[in-house]
Image 1: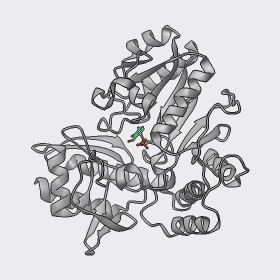
Image 2: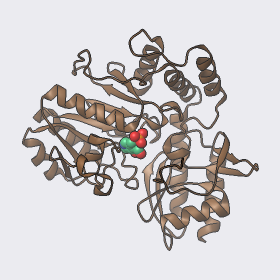
Image 3: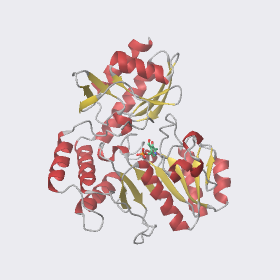
Length: 375
Ligand SMILES: Cc1ncc(COP(=O)(O)O)c(C=O)c1O
């Protein structure tokens, strides 16, 4: 059997990792500033994480959501405290798209409305509702297209207000910082206006923090830079450092009813053990503060390099454009000539999404290799 050929692959196979480094079978070392697409939050093969997951799989890897699972309540308590949302409830699932799917469904159940407002260049995932709220017709099958989703440009106050005034929308969904589009931020004024308008019109506000959350922006959630409080927050990627896991944080105003959401694998014992270990390490090693500090250093130093056209983002969620290079060319040069993994976005942007534990020395190594490529 062949693999279904949907991914463009680099001809490199990392077989082992440690912190912000990965290694191929012949021992060649690569600096990982991509984190497997913003997934590696506490670093590859962190010893505390390895022990927690290994101990759990040796004890009990899985049981269904029909019995008590105190790992779920422990994770909810910790996540509520660390994220600043102790009064919210937690629904656990398996991926980012599934988290958004459940968030939009919950908003629709709660309001009785069927429409979702999303924003230009948004990416919310590839399942049915999530891809319908994504601004990319190329990944929507005819089956996914629906009048239930309206897209207005990001930061377009008037368009947003006009749409919500119809009171047809169950929810507005917005990324804390847009990732796949190439690191674009909603302005704080826009987020405040959106939050106010949602309250006024009985619309729920969903913050998709799947890429921008979990400390990546230098605060636990990117929207916390603006001080708004959404009704629903979705997480995945960094939540379990590579173990598949998604989460929906739900405001106390939203009422749970038995059976309204569900999943076989969501919240399983291994995923919870992995997610608890991630929060423990984040707290012990002050990784949110580290992301803020090393991110600010990287952004400042990148802006000083001649030929660097644009640097966008916050913390360790950075978009970079360099004169004379497409994103793809720059990534290939960094990877094959200088052994550094980065991410792409659109034609010109290179994305940096490293582990939150990236050190200043590792940031310096990147800056010096980047200068060799472009100067
Ligand atoms: C902002 C955002 N939302 C949703 C998703 C979808 O997550 P997943 O690939 O885990 O389904 C992604 C993935 O890149 C994302 O960046």
